Image (cartoon, rainbow, N blue to C red; front, side):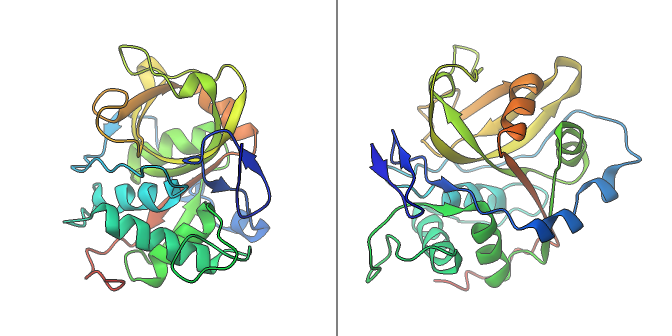
Length: 237
């Protein structure tokens, strides 16, 4: 087991999502922007496939994938960019230490909220909204853009089948950040992009059922949507 910044333990160091939900976020639901819509299928293109390697930087890599995806595709994002986004989030989050140079103590992991705040700090987004339930997520992905997810990660999610489908089965290995960039309402499926390289899943992608996602959201899951996206210069380079 590996210990993260908040004192929690994970079976896989790549599972670096920490829970830090701010109740004030309830005042900023995505629902108000999509509540009159009907579910529709949508896939938001993301041209890159990043690999976080043996680090807890899933938040930084998930954030980089979100920025690289439609509707405002920031070009030329790399592993180094994702790590710098991650380290900045570690400086923002409420726990001491991190994995950046000079951090004391040395720890992996950060929160989804801190990643969003780092994206905002560097000028890539104006704001962000949250999904509070499965229907919010379905409509948000259908109309607004990809969702930056933070959920528990189960054993059955680590090994997609040949079609890329993952299952919420077995024991919880830790918390993970990933991107949901596709919704297929008539099949009750989401499509997503992980940060474990293009040899994992189907070219780095996976599918998960509405039922499994609903369970994850009820287990302290988070789903965030960015607003006011900018193809800004890399202010942190």
